[in-house]
Image (cartoon, rainbow, N blue to C red):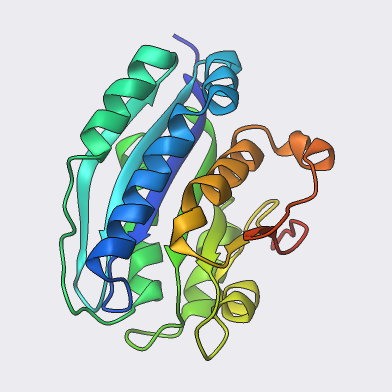
Length: 226
């Protein structure tokens, strides 16, 4: 077997802090599933050498992180559909939790030990709609994770104050070709997640993607923190 058994190992880290109500959580979870089932996304997964591996974590306040779905190998439409069915069945793990982005990143980074170096790229896909209000400072932790070659991307629902988009840009995203995807509403989460997945699955596609419209916003060009 090749030392590189897959192209991408992706941790989907879902925010279940108190700012995300039960309806927004359902829209977020279902939006992730809808994005994975999109034909463009499935086509890219099938095209990738060795496919990809994906896991799902949920995060809230201090000591509130869990991995409800272990690593799954996606290589074709059938494996994607099995993963999405599993995803749509998970409930949120925490209620009325603080927002601890630092521990969310540490927890997500630890998940890569379960797949080792079998995948060429390691990416953390962290969602959020607010800034951290618990845990240690985010920037040193995000910088340390990114320095290992892990990419931390953000999918941010804008509108709160302080501005979560500016926060994710300044504090959270790190690593090779890191970027923030922005949506104005959880109702548009599926479209934003699709666009984000396309960039993560095939980073060279960014120059060919159409300009976003309405709530489907690409906030920034990717950047790298070595």
